[in-house]
Structures are given as C-alpha cells and as structure tokens.
Amino acid sequence: MSLEQTACEVVLLGVSLCVATGASQWILDPETRIVSLSQSLTNHPFFILSTVVLIVILLLGVHKRVIASSIITSRTREVLGDFNMSCDDSGKLILRPRPTNIT
Image (tube, rainbow, N blue to C red; front, side):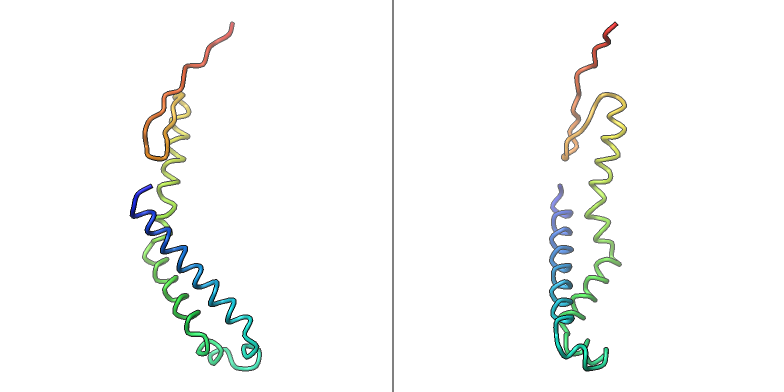
C-alpha cells in the first residue's frame, strides 16, 4: 500500500466520521423539529462544513485512489491464477508448485 493511498484513506475516513458526527448532532437536536430546515442547518455549521468537504474530496476522486489498487491487485491475481501463479499486496510474483496429474 502506497503512502498516497494511505493518506487518502485517512482523509476519507476522517471526513466521513466528521459528517457522521455532525449528522448525529443535527438529528438529535430538539430544535430541529421546531425550526425551518435552513435555520436548522445554520445552527449546525460543523455538519454543513464537513458535508461540503466530503463532496469536494469525492469530486476530486479520492475514493477512486483508495479502491483502485485493490481492484488492480484482485484482477491481477485472477489472471495469474490461470497460470498457477499469484502475487502479494506489494506486487511480488508468487509461483505455486505445478499440480500433479494422477493417472
């Protein structure tokens, strides 16, 4: 796993937790049921800010960087399996012993 991918995972996880925390505070606020939607959202700037940040990083494609290497690795393993080989997470080739034909 590369440093860039790890950083993207940490950023995505952190922002997602911020959105979840802000959403729970917003939903559990008793004033939410009383005031209008715009006033309720104005009362919870943490939720709005974290949601905007999440949308921006998703538009920038951070989620693709997080899952791209796992997709490539799984597809490579699938192809190598046909040739009795595999690879580890760092990309090193693993040669498996040849199957014995019992006749």
